[in-house]
Amino acid sequence: MALLSDDIVQNVKEMLADMPREGTLTVFTDDQDCEYCEQILQLVDEVAATTDRVRVEKFEIHKNADEAAAMNISRAPAIAITGEEDYGLRFYGIPSGYEFSTLLHGIHAASQGTSDLDGQVKDFLDGLSKPVDFKVFVTPTCPYCPRAAVLAMEMAIESKLVHANVIESAEFPELASQYNVMGVPLSVINDTERVEGAAPPQMIVDAVRKAIAT
Image (cartoon, rainbow, N blue to C red; front, side, top):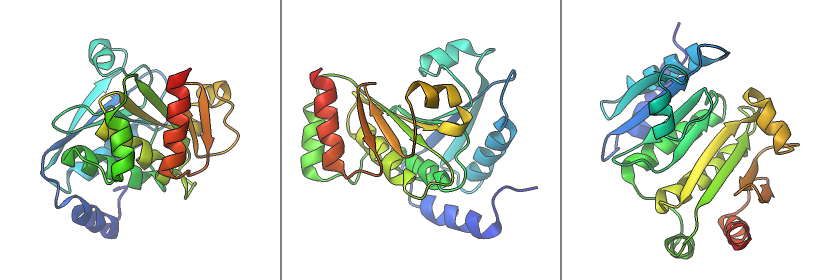
């Protein structure tokens, strides 16, 4: 049984129709403990079937440890979203509910290799000299989460020093506990700065500035 309805398939086709370059969804599953791995594999296949611009690669994190290490994947399920280059876009968990739009945006942005961020934010990212790691905790039922997740991804598109890790908190309770996730979206930057809610770009820039200053 298909996961995507005919209407959603049509919407995906329209959204991905103008992808200028090919994109790849590299999926890492876990054959030891993975509640939604089958659904994730089916989902990415159904997305890829809507366009000839998206291809899918599938690995098992334990059997394909070298491939996982090469993409800096340490847990599964995970989806690495890449274009002509790897911009550091990662989604951990199943991109369902509201987070399906995050997956689609990541695919399109990685294909373009550019973002819709304003000039001031781009200038700030151009001037980065230290790495920036985003962990954006989300849930599929949170309508505000895609804004936070997409912003992190757009920043990663603009700077090779930025990596965006979107984490479905219910699927990774140990991480949610480690980072004391009480509500979503929550953006954790370099494990030091926390921004709750779908904050505007300038607020995230300020948090990044604090994080790299420590």
